[in-house]
View 1 (spheres, rainbow, N blue to C red):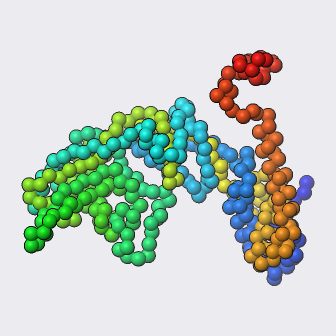
View 2 (tube, helix red, strand yellow):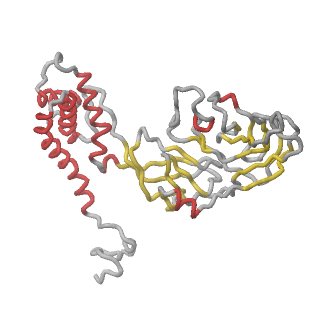
Length: 355
């Protein structure tokens, strides 16, 4: 059998590019080109059946948001099954929240200001309480300029709990303003206007299950003034809807226990590291060689040779894609009538087909 290992791919790259010597390009450099093409270009050019897998995760009671590991998977797609039940899956927040309204409950007078910053301790009445969460991937708003981001941005927060009250009047009879605290999904409360990124700078805590809150504000709350809370209470049960947004799955209703969530996803190939290692399907090896050579040509501004060899790269891609095409030709396009199938040795069509 013809060689299909990483070492064979290297040799073909050297032949295509006319660089037989390590002095011209090292094996390490060739490996970088091969794996760059294999990991980042190849799966985007070709969404192949061997890279299509069943992705699963297990829910946690009272947790509604789950990160999708984008460093290992390219995309995901419906249908989604939760505990074996086919469930609604969308990428539209508009559709999801139109069906699953999550309106803030305003609870007034949870505590009364005493002219100090606190701490104020109280218990919210409607519970359990939906917890906030962090964006995925974290660091979306990272910056090297100290103090240029609010606490919300620096911590990548999507908060669900808001505790607020009027601050004491400023010196000279100025008009008072409100001060607020938000949650981080981990049971901590923060001031959304504080630019500090120190996780120890939390100004309070919240227990999402019992509703117990301890809050210390950034400035004093006016004496006798009401402190209010806004949050989303819920009744936990088996989730029936999922929205995929900012590389996260948002489930509703909030799970009341562990459930298996299952759907299809395209994974990244496995990087080639060892000399005797072959790609996932050995037939891919020539495509990887042409793809790596194409990157070498373009990095060296050798566009004449790049143009010369790209038809061969395209030919390899078409040959690789043939397997997936043939695999899919035996199955008709799904319709609303697809499950109305007539059993039998000569079963084809459906109950409405006339056969």
